[in-house]
Length: 180
Image (spheres, rainbow, N blue to C red):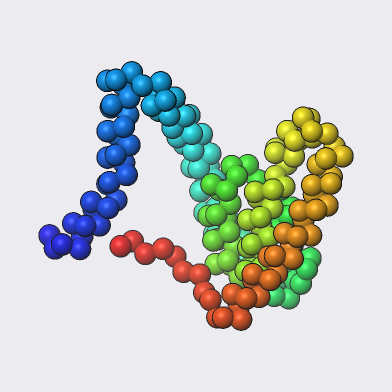
């Protein structure tokens, strides 16, 4: 084995090994902070195991069944500003937060969505999801939620357009991550 793959293996295993040592030390020394960290990690890992497999199946079905021309028509260059409305609908009804939003955004880009729509989709996935909105309304009220939407959505669309146009002007292209 050459030095480069060995370094890559060490780099990929360093954080999990350090976390494993931290967990072991927390159990042996009965550290409350470490035990709470382990509980939080297991809770989050359980949520990921419940959300990600069905999400990836749906993303795979999306990639197989939705034709590229339909995405280009509604989320591509010819769609204009109405494409942000479609990204708002798609992101607003999504469950799983940004864990699911990033793979969906990549699939949308591969199907021909423009960068501005990808940015508005990711922004609305973080800000305007329906489950989060209902939770917010129940605690902070409808008026607060509407003011937050009125402030956040126009700024989000404006920034998505600025960033999208800057990337397109520079000829940026998104590629699948390499396996090395």
